[in-house]
Length: 264
Image (cartoon, helix red, strand yellow):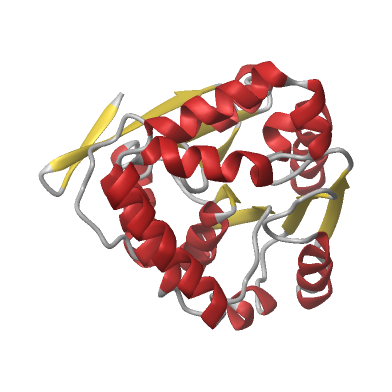
């Protein structure tokens, strides 16, 4: 299904019944990373998963994509679907940055927040430089080059060695991302504001989920965020890297289901 916005469109799907959950994927991924959740939790929640600008099946809008812009896209989708607040918002990596931006602008929208494989801080100078390099690589070599470069870091070594089928699927998802999507997202992440004060003041329930083998955002950052957010819950998922929703879906789904029960 699609929603038309800004002379383009976003693809999305909606499944299940119950508490609304908006799933926001990371870079350079798509709504396909939430397949194990959409397939299993249909009797627990009404799940909405979208492809962000330039990712998955959505239109390859020209960037940059600020986190506020992507958050506004998410808000427009909920409005279009007439999803009444409050809702749960589950964001992974860049999706977490978007979740924080959405909370900063629309705190009343939130029934709860699920921050997965993400951090509240802005990019360091080194991080910005690395993103600039990735922009040039994407423009010169394409999405496949970016996907190949990320594959070794985005999943746990356990996943790499024991689940080649999943690794191939993740590579396919990343390779499908448009160059416009890659560049627009990198530019937006590079300039995103620090959200530390935003999440520190969160008044809705917050669940933090993080893989213990995450090489892109170390587990210590999730532990620090847990200390920062009063009343938050931290679930550490062993043998998972940056994509615990795919690498260890049973544990991830149990954490989501427990969170749903706790805030019902």
